[in-house]
Length: 87
Image: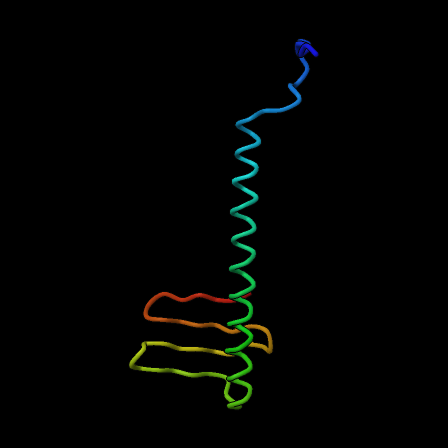
């Protein structure tokens, strides 16, 4: 069967470059989501440990690490001069 030409002004049915870009994006998104699951698990473990120890803040001078339990689902971890906060 012969391939028919695309009519002027009509977008082609497929675009190889766009397909590859979309597949690469989906792979990166899926990888990020898997990492996020691990991050959430680790955050919950930090919160659970602090609750078990009945503390709301922790500091380790040797590791230059500070943890502040802000709510039951939010923890702030600061290492050195940089900090990361969970929303």
